[in-house]
Image (cartoon, rainbow, N blue to C red; front, top):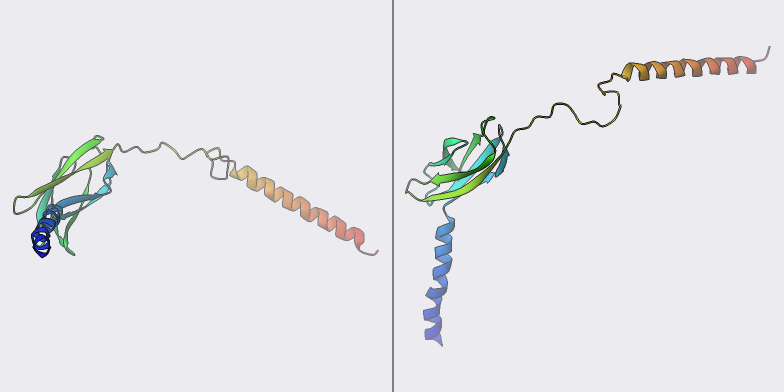
Length: 156
């Protein structure tokens, strides 16, 4: 029984160490879906995170990622004129290992005007002066009625 446990223990440790080695080289984008003209944060890891590496992608070109708190980090801007689509992002470590992910670029769309939410004071029809004038007229009328009511009650 002990002999089986001794023989089984290295076999169990092998997949764990292989999975750990595979996970040490990676690249992450935050956000992975970005509008043209916006920034994206890069976070990567190589087996040696004390040496800078390079991230390349069509939208952002070649970006060096530098050591920062145990990871390799950088920020890049997707050009405003970048066509929408999916782009491969590749990390190249100094030891030659690579990792890749996908950046989803959305077209930059600017609204022509604000949403149609009703006829408030900021509406383009400029109804604010009419509303203010009507409010002032109502207050003057109310003040006049108060004065008339006060004179009727006062003794003569």
